[in-house]
Every structure is written in structure tokens, then in C-alpha cells.
Length: 274
Image (cartoon, rainbow, N blue to C red; front, side, top):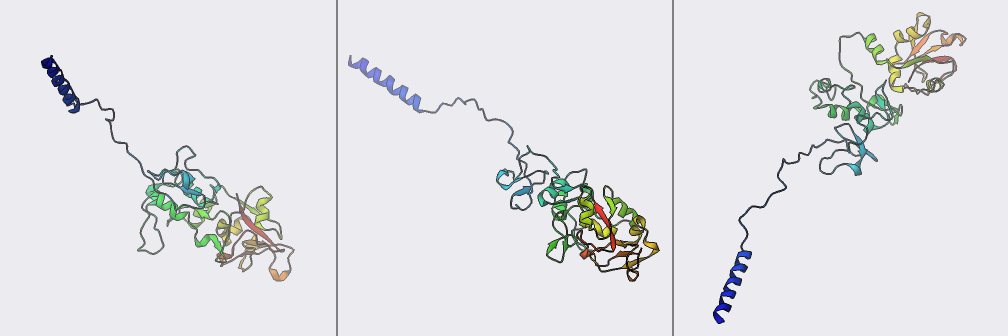
């Protein structure tokens, strides 16, 4: 009886030892596969509400993916909310960048040849995203009196390049899609465009501020004069006092003072509307 008990104890001990030793038989792995590739994005500096990424999406900073720094892809890509596609200007920085990134509007091979600044030693943009981020920031052309915007559409991404193309042809190309309208005496461009259900593009006034352009849309009586009024470019009304040169066209050499709200009781403004 004692011998049988001893055998049982030995068998029990062997079972416990076997159970304690890890099995050498490999288990079936369920996690075999390719490593997940996470595509990262560059982004604009977070604004008050929005941020745009290098894929062309706009989102809130809180919805940005923490691992990739990309916006969710459920929304509209290359969105142009609040943008005027004729002037390529927007009232929002983030949507300006998103709209600019559309390959149909900005070719990367051309964008990367544009200098970041005017000096000859200045470098070029590294990518279409860098170009759009840089272009959509405010510039001196969008500001009047050094502390006020000339228009709500002050984030622009149009591509200006040196070219042998005649200046007049380039001007006409930039005016594509824009209605150039002549106002009544005393009427501002803001009022002229609003009466047509459109907005005045203040950043385009400089394109019209030339004698050859004025003569294309107005009579000008074959003469143009430099003026300093807030109503340029314009034509003096035929019934204006003689000392104001009735019928003559006026332009200014101080383009930083061009804005849509200017008017004069004796002049008819030339206005860019869209």
C-alpha cells in the first residue's frame, strides 16, 4: 500500500514539473503582416479655428490626427470656400492654401521655380505646399494705410512670373473672369459691383490704373492725367467744371491708395467686379 502511494506521488510530481516547463511547440501567430505605413502631413500654423494640411484638406486643430498630423479625409479636398477663383484671392488663409494646392490651379513644377523674395540671392519654394503657404500670407499689396486691408479677399495665391509676354496681354489674362464696369458720377466701385450682385476686387484696381486700359473702356478724349484722388482710375464727367478737365481720364501713381470705396461727384470710376 505504501509502495503504491509512493508511485502516485512520483507521478503527480512529474505532471506538475511538465506543466511548469514552457512548451517548445510554437503557437500560431495572428499578428504577422506588413508594418502599417503612416503618411505624415505638413500643416499651416494653427489659426484661431482652422488648420490646413499638405494633402489639401481643412479641419479644426482638434480633429488633426495625432500620429500623422493630417486632417480627416472625409471633407472636401482642395476646398475654395470664401475664394474668388477669378482673382485667386480668399477671405480665409486656410482655405486659400487648400484651394491653391489643387494641381489644376498650381503646378508644382512651376511653383518650385518661384523665388520666395525679390532679391536675386533669394531661394525658391521647396514644394507646392510651401508656395501656397507663402503666397497666401498677407502682402503689401493687400494693405492700405499700413494697418488696414484693402479687401476682405486679402489671401491670394496668383502666380506672377517674369515673361517676355507683352504687358497688355498679361493684364488681359489676369482680368479673365472679371467684369470691368464703368460707374456713374459720384458712385464708388463698391456700389457699382453691388448693384450687379458682385463684389469689388480691390487687389485688381491696380490692373485698371493705366492709361491704355482706361482708354479701352472709356473715351478719355485722348488724354490721361496723373491724379491723387481716392476715386482712381476714373474718367471726369462731361458736365464737370472746366478746371477739372471734363472727359479726361485719371490714374494715380500711389497705388497703395487704391480702394473700392473711393468716389468723387464729378468722376466715373472703372471697376473690377466678380
